Length: 207
Image (tube, rainbow, N blue to C red):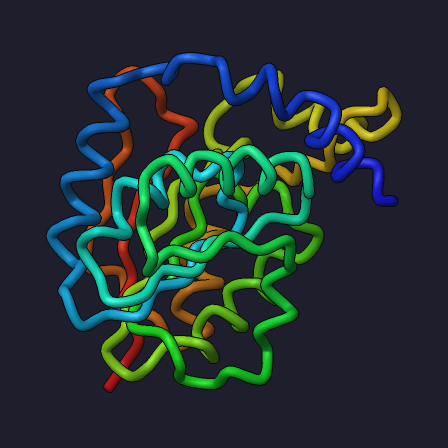
C-alpha cells in the first residue's frame, strides 16, 4: 500500500474528531460553492476524506459521488452517510483516474485540500476537465506552498522520508497555468487574509 494511503488510514479516526481549523473560512467556501450547485447536477468530489463536506453539499444536487484512496476514511464517511439517510450520496474507495472513461459526465467536480497531495497536479486537472460537461465547474481549495517565502516550500520534497504523506509545492501561478492549459477559466478566486498559502477558486470549463 502507498505510504500516503497508509498515513491517512492510520490517522483517520483522529482526523474525524478534529474541529475545523478556521470555521469562518470554511463557511465562506461552502457558501461560494453552493452558489454554483443546482438540483439537477451530478457531482464528483475526489479526496473527500471523512465526507463532512460531501454530506453538506449532497442535498443540493441530484447525485453526489465522493471518493478517497484511504479505506479507513471512506469507512467513517459511510457511517456518517448511513446516519444522514441521504440516498443520492455514494462514498467509494477510488482514485480520480478510475473515472477516466466517464468523459463529460459531471456538472461539477470538487477537489478540496487535495491538489498539493497528488503526484501530478496538471494531470489531475486535465482529467477533471475531461470529466466535466461543457460549462461544468471545478471547485478547488489547495495549499500553494511556493507562494512567498515560507519554510513549507523547502520541507515539502522530503515529507515521505518521515512516513508522512506526499506533499507537492507549487505557486498560485503554477496552479492557474494548469487550469487554463486544461481549458478551464477561473471564475472566482479567494485567498484568505489570515492564510496566504490557501488558494480557493472556482473554474469553469469552456462551452
